[in-house]
Amino acid sequence: MHFLIFGVGLYFLPAIIAAVRHTHNSTGILLLNLFLGWTMVGWFVALLMAIFSMPNYGPNYGPYYGPHCGPYRDSYYYHRGW
Image 1 (cartoon, rainbow, N blue to C red):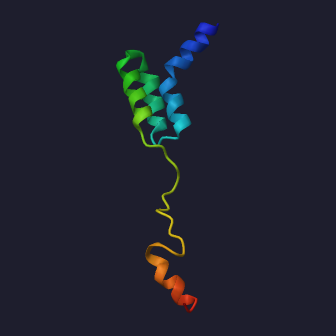
Image 2 (image 1 turned 180 degrees about the vertical axis):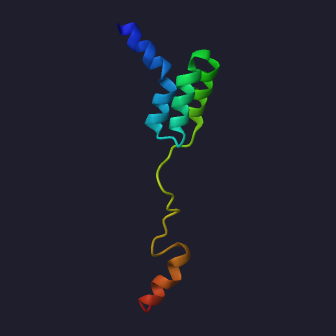
């Protein structure tokens, strides 16, 4: 029984890595792993896709510009009369 659980976990390892890393193509990695993982070439391709895909951190808000730096630094002092 433990061998079966270990084998299923090892088979779906690329999909698990993609889900934990929140990659943008985790569904594609799961489907590739599910349908072509048995060929071992498909499993390695899915594993490489899961490892080297960029994680999805949510919307890109760009760099943080505080009131004293970036393009807004002059307007910060202008509105305060400095």
